[in-house]
Image (cartoon, helix red, strand yellow):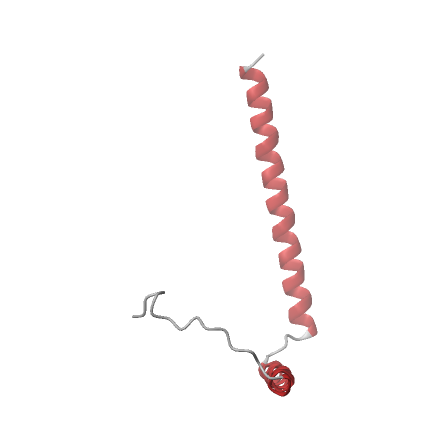
Amino acid sequence: MTSPISENTTATSPDSGADSSRKGGFLLATLEELKLVVWPSRQQLFSESIAVILMVTLSAATIAAVSRFFGWASSQVFR
């Protein structure tokens, strides 16, 4: 385990050539990772989108109903 005091905190200045190769390396690594992604089918994307829309709608309706109930209850208590 290292403590913050024992860490090497000296800043290193990157070379301009090394900086461009890092960007290229990052881009290549990103593209390689994107090749490994399993993309959903059109049907799966559609059905899961509908499920998300329904759940958001139900959640919003529930929150609105609870809010209206507590608004009504507070108006009854604090007349």
